[in-house]
Length: 260
Image 1 (tube, rainbow, N blue to C red):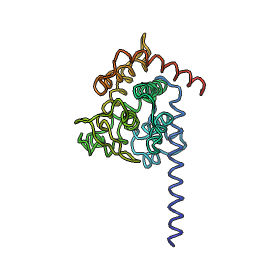
Image 2 (image 1 turned 135 degrees about the horizontal axis):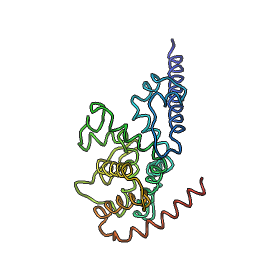
Image 3 (image 1 turned 90 degrees about the vertical axis):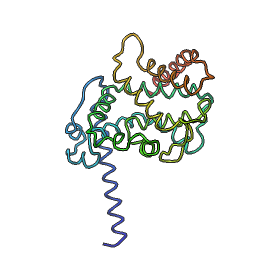
Image 4 (image 1 turned 30 degrees about the horizontal axis):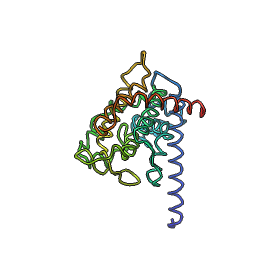
């Protein structure tokens, strides 16, 4: 086989793998779409995608990896513009606090609107055997963790959050600040390990809150934003966040209705 033929076969194989992965993600999206409760086995996800369980395992590994990438597909409209704007040096929000509230509310609302998938992903993560959990394997050292942040539970959200917090009034120096490497470049600001811990708390709060009188995305957004501002932007009065969040919620909800 010539080098040209080999390259052609490799490209064809890569195209097939990409299409197979896309079919599996789309199958999972269709299964979980609109569900507040419920879960599916790995075999059921494979069947919905029109592939065998062995094919799913070959392309993703465990159930968590499938659900993580499926969940990230839902978050792409929120997070990809932030990442791409950072890469192109076009991400320059006028107000860092408003941008934080907008980012957190859109993420929590999307997660809550797709509660069955979000909760299934979180369960699958914690049900993964310890010897396959990347956060346990690599420990919690800054460099070891940050090099693999995008592979962890909530790592995609943490990637976006790291960029959001790389703006005034959150930029500063100290032991919790430094440079974090993601695909596409280094981000200076609050360390990736810190943003990952924030994201894990966000997801776990969404998992455990059942609802009630208060809007859950608003409640979780306010809790997380209050903690971030109180620690990393102390010149900003926390008492202002409620009014800011009310205004941003109206804007985001109106935009979602327009887009929907």
